[in-house]
Length: 295
Image (cartoon, rainbow, N blue to C red; front, side):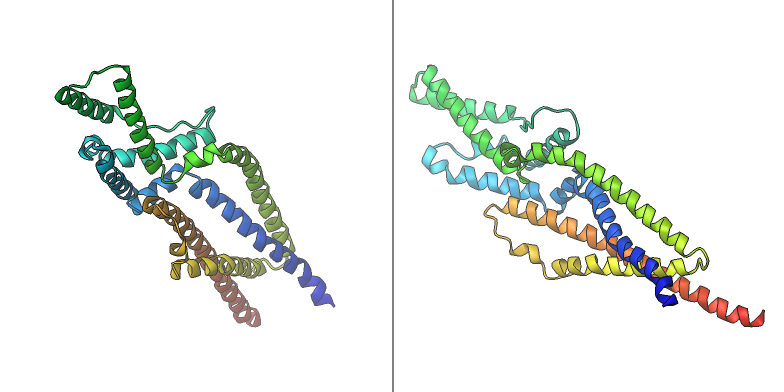
């Protein structure tokens, strides 16, 4: 009974510490890694989203060339792969400006100066060669064509679909949630610290025992999270998702893989740290057994 009373508070505190540590680590990862511009920039580079987006632009304008009579080069000569990369990153930066700064609306666009000039030149040349009058109807047709092309390019460049999220009002809700999330993260960090201090006080008579309980905490929390993450990565689980557009598929799957990899790495480190604590505990206990008899 005495042993139960002795160990029960430590077991209870360790149990609480495991789940608080998991919550704290995940919240810190979300705040410092997942919900950052850098994360989306990394996925953009790793998944070659600019190349895939530009391929989608090429395929679109080439497929409609026969029906419209407008050569694909009219558009493609004015839009480069680098333009698409800048457009993708611009959509991300605009989203995070809206989420973290005092920006009223999410407004994503690209520099279409070259495109507008190319399309206008084509229509003007066509009108001159075929004797069409450049009246108001002609100008409206030119502008309609430009707007349609720009809208499609923006849609393709919005690989992470922040535009769709903003359109449905979810980006606004996310901004509101981030304020609450920061408070939750603070509470988790403080709670973890408090439980850690209480566990330390419970082990004040035998300080080396703290390494044992911290070791268990690290190993269990590390295994609980890293094992499922490693399974998802090892089986390439996310590649089974079905998304029509290649650039959007790569963006979604790439981001999920990025998060899973970051989580698994963080909790593997946590597990390894737990093993080190247990080794230290064992070394200290052995040293005590070897030294005490001599005293």
